[in-house]
Amino acid sequence: MPSSDNQEAFEQFKIIAGLGSDDSSSDVDDKINRLLTIHDHDLNNAILTYLESGFETVESAQVNTQNDTGTSSAIDPREIEGNGTGTGGGENDDDDGGIGELIHRSASTRTRGDYVNLQSQMFLNSLTPRLPKAPQISTRWQLDVGIYSSLIHEREEKQKRELAGEKKWQANESVIEHSREIDSDTSSTRSSAAARSNTSILNTLWFILLIIPKNILSVIINSIKFFFGFGWGGDDEGDNNFKLNRSYDFEKFHPDYSYLSTLKEKQESEDETNSIDMYDIVESGFNELHSHCQREYDWLLVVLTNDLPETTKFMKKLLRNSHFKKSFNKNNGNFKSTKMYFANVDHSPEAWEIGQTYKIKRTPYVMLVANVSPSPDIMASMSIVYKSNLSKQFIMDDELSITVSKIAKYLVKNIDKYNPQLVAAKYDKQETDFSRLIRQQQDDAYTQSLLKDKLKKQKRDEELRLKEETESLVKLRRWFLLNLIKDNHIEGLTDPDDSLRVAVKLPSGKRLIEQFNKSITILQFFIYIELKLFIEETTSELNHANDNWLQDEATIDELIGELNSDLSDEHKCRFQDVHHYYSVNPFKFEVVQPYPKKVIACDSELTIGEVPEFKGANFLVEYIVEEEDDDDEDEEG
Image 1: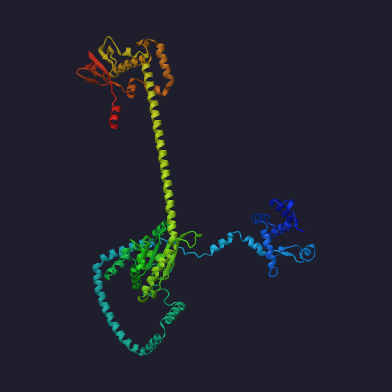
Image 2: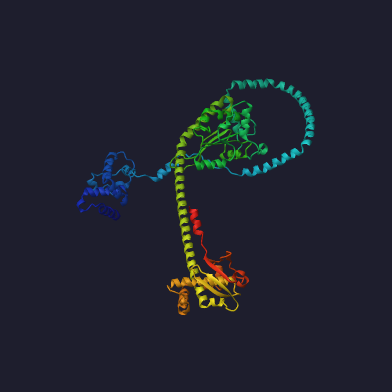
């Protein structure tokens, strides 16, 4: 009998699958039990399988069981239905003919194989070969360059100062060298006798070397070097091995050295065509080139050489190679955007640092770098697509042409392989940059719009403030002049005893004749005219036929009361007297003497008795015409 948990899973399966009492046949129950058994009574997986394929999985498993019963050598006990104890007795054995129904595990394997195993996929991706990383180099060499550059400069200056003494030293050195030559001639005479005795041994060795093939001899010599360490340290001047894990020898360093210029001079001295100018080559700034190629998805070609004549020949041959020119010519090359870095490790500390970082073994060293990946599932990074450490035997005269041709072809082959990645990345970058540019333009336009709105708001606020200030100033003027009228200010300006008779004609045509006190200032005389003009304005506003309202104190108090409610105490304090009034409210009229025509200037210090024009004066009051509007119209026209 199935356990209580299995029975509960059985009942829940029927309820979820919608298999009611009508479907409760023994065949359906057996299929449900088989399906649950396949999934280890995992209700979720069993329901998922049933919803996808029904009971087809169970039927296929039963067929496979009948075909594979005799061949299966490993059967899980939970894949046996019927006899749970394995004793071989009971009703189930009778129903099955004495054989428990076996469900081959291959059925469950085929069922589960329809789903993707992410762990397996990640494991397979981890087995994909990765390209070697191409990091940037350290900048610690720059400090040494600065130190040695200053030392070299000091040494050159010292040599210039000691030029005269050096000539004398060279003369003495020539005498010593002559004596050494005499000694060497004597020693060579002595050694010649010993050499004759060893001639027979040397002839025998030469005969043996002629018999042994060249390749076998090379293998023997290299084996001896490898096992006994002879010549592997790079101490020989004629080898092209790179000295790893060693510091740079600054004896050959000079800050003014240029590898490309030296190579160009050698080509010109040998009457060869200048092939360097056909390419966009640099010999410094590796990290800058590295960053540019990583950011812009360009190719980076690095070639490191030394002072050996063979490497110089290799460089000349490479630059003149037809495949190389067709690919990297800066004018019409197929990959003319490739950045090229050529340098000499013997004279350039930066090139030496590149060799140490990338652990090169020999020079010339050719390396092709790009921001690519070997698989779409792997994120692209600066990687070495191709590299070549050339042994000296491959750059000798008999092998040089073949080596250069192969390297040029390999470079083109690898570029063709990975260039679609760079093209796609460039296209994506262009789209990203274009989208960023559009967003930036939109942001700028939005910012400009906000700025314009802000300026418009500021302008409106300023106009509103000026309007309110103007209205407040107009009310303040009315309030001040009404208070002067209330205080009988006009009567204080006239005096019939010591006075001057002055006639004034207002712009309205009204003529005023008054006896003014000689001690009043011209400013007070202007205030008198201001009050008269204000009285005419107020009379017109009140629709009065005359100025009788001036005798009605209740009317004046009512007008002042209306203004008091609109003005604050702070505003009322702005006009303490007529001097403050004039400083804030310049008069909009001028007083003119008709003949000879003269404009009377307002003065707060000068009295009218001191001005000759006021004796029996007859003045005209004219409004000042504002010419601002006319000027604006002229500018618009």
